[in-house]
Image 1 (cartoon, one colour):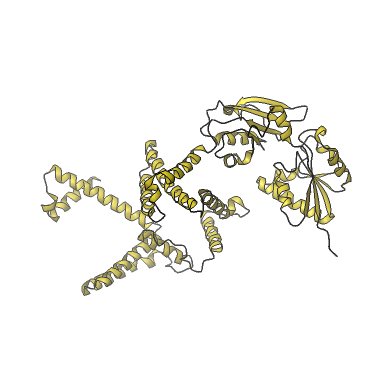
Image 2 (cartoon, rainbow, N blue to C red):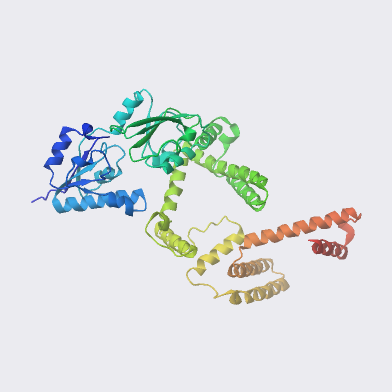
Length: 482
């Protein structure tokens, strides 16, 4: 005998008071012995007597996702226990009801959704607009920056239940003039209904938002996220119309990607906390690097392989997965534990068989040496501290000289490599990034030798004929002054 799946009948309580609750909904409520309310904070919630509400979940959960997940799980458990339950939500079950979306996707239950009037119908009436003719877009206030990206037309923004939500919405549009008209609609379909006309600049300062608040924006001067959208379109245009851009491939762009990366590093090292003008170079170089990323994504998009959206979505989802202490229930004590969790999650995701899988072969040699040593150390193949690593420098130095005495060029190169590898190992144990340290030493040498050149010019000394002793003297002068 087949056992019927647990059933959840979902009804909507309309946008306001009892006038907007349908007769069919009232019949279903009356016939249901087990009733549940998403929230009792709704003008018509009282038409569902003897109902269990989930208002306590809103107080205890950390995020709205947690709220929706908890409510959905409790409803499934109740349906499993009783066989059939009724679940009542504000407005319409299919308009901005995440719990209902979850229930519809849950294979453990059968979800029967009954139609109801939503706040949208009252909003259209109060605004005297046809949503189709106006090209109206419905946006969730909690996802405004993403959901409205690239759009500057008419919007009705829901889920604007608090002034901090209104503030986040306002700040998401950097290019707004502030004079754009805005209509705030509150408590539609109740005696306390209010229609307030204001501006974008005063969006979060005009009213006290509540759970029956939504916002109508006829148009914005600039689309949300307009700069990124414009940048993306520019990359497509250049690829389609510029002869040079059209000739480029993923492979031909590698050297430009590396050059721009190094120029970003230079700009970072030149930053001065006391000189805001040094930010200008970093802004420019980050833009150049971002264009390289966009360029590769545009090429792939033309080939039908992937898009910039795939790139952004992929890194977004990966960062969420690898930060369970932020987006999940994992607790961490410090940054070291964060790194350990990251590595563990990464190993599971990548299903790697070697600790060296994923180590970039194309990175600079010092960084490569540092990375492979660090990977080996994570599984215990390492000196306990720097005192074990330091003697290897003397040992490798001696082997370099032995190879030098033989005149065997390949052997010399091999031993010099071992010596450098030993130096990197010491740097790692001392907590020094060797690439950065050598770059700093090289920069210091360059500055001092430029000082030698300057003194030589001032004193009429020809560097090419001065001799080592004279140059050493100039060097010591510069070093003492620095």
